[in-house]
Image 1 (spheres, rainbow, N blue to C red):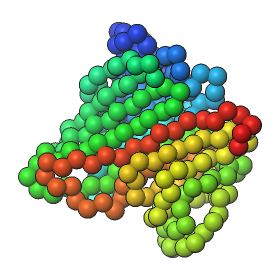
Image 2 (image 1 turned 180 degrees about the vertical axis):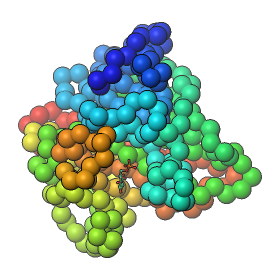
Image 3 (image 1 turned 120 degrees about the vertical axis):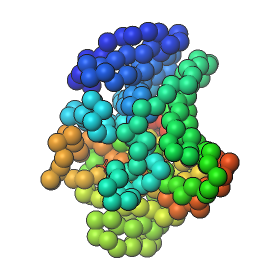
Image 4 (image 1 turned 45 degrees about the vertical axis):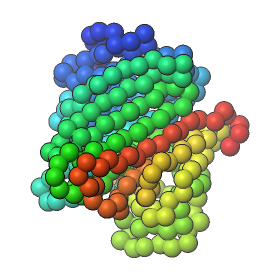
Length: 280
Ligand SMILES: O=P(O)(O)OC[C@H]1O[C@@H](O)[C@H](O)[C@@H](O)[C@@H]1O
């Protein structure tokens, strides 16, 4: 990350609070297993790197880090809707533009556990991150209001890769909506998509494997009903995307769930880790 971060205070044995020049606050974790950087603006994990391994997440060199727009990279949270939503409201919802509260930091033998929360209208959103040899992400929505709550959510992960055109992706699903062509595709076994692509898999697999050169990322989804696969290619990019060949977005998503009943909760998550080089 190019902007400098000023340490504020220690939160636990392996984590501390920092602030950048624009006033955004961050949590840096450096424990026995991995290092990570989280932005409280957006509740967004920006960096995660197991020790001795390559960075798992991509963060744009030109990401805007002043709170004026969503941060490009890491794991933005799309919530409570995905995509355009109602005209005049922000694409992918309000969570990635919100100021989250840090609820707790806990050190365990497996790593560091961070809990965050955000309130929006009649809903409470809680995010739990476990930073260890593997990364675990869990997002939970609770409907605090009297009426059913229509809800979509996606963990819009930007996974770092040596080059998008050298990737092979197993475990997406047989059918998808091609958002670029506006068509449905059934029974496609394409494991080597070429950028640009923008697809919503509607019968997603539980385990996705992202191979690229000697890297293998294992991604175990929890309670999703869709997977979104996105890379914009090299042309007509917004200013905050630098070097798009360096990422593949594989988004663990809940896009077709029924409205959440009053008092009800809904969870979405994933666990991912890198396998040792040479095993892909
Ligand atoms: O630029 P944004 O709002 O972060 O969206 C990036 C992309 O996010 C993906 O999830 C969508 O499928 C794409 O259509 C979209 O372009």
